[in-house]
Image (cartoon, rainbow, N blue to C red; front, side):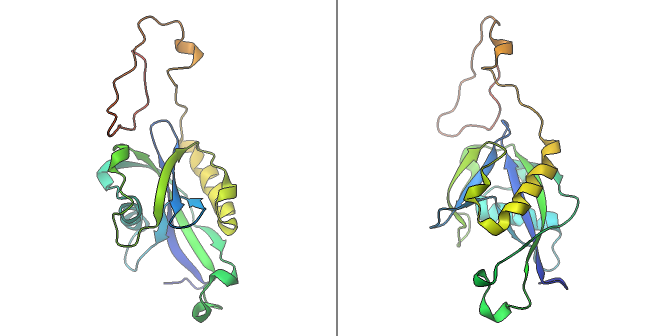
Length: 190
């Protein structure tokens, strides 16, 4: 499904943990990293497509996340000809995307990269919000930068227990962590 200008409607997903780190997926059998993304099917809203893609690519369900924000408008990137199948060259130009910012309220072990028959990623990690875009395929970097910038207004500063502000508090204790599956809540001092 292409628009008149040759762009395929798509969604992109920036998933945050409680420490405002982003979920970063390594593409199967490649050395590139990216955010989850995928096409909007006929009859789907961008939000419906986002939840479907989230489950297909990460195994996460709507109850594992909270929607924080989305881009106001479509962000577009053009795909170079050598990445486009010969039969659609001349018609297909690239992707137009609505980007969603989500907060993970589930646990890290809720992620399942094998949730679909055609996995997109073979590894994942949490990374600082301003991820190094040099590991993203070149033609997507501009859209990633725009999405991160626009959605950054929803990201609030997180106080870490190791900050100097808490250095002089008495009886600081760290909460016990479940080593098998940790919840993505920030560590707080008591």
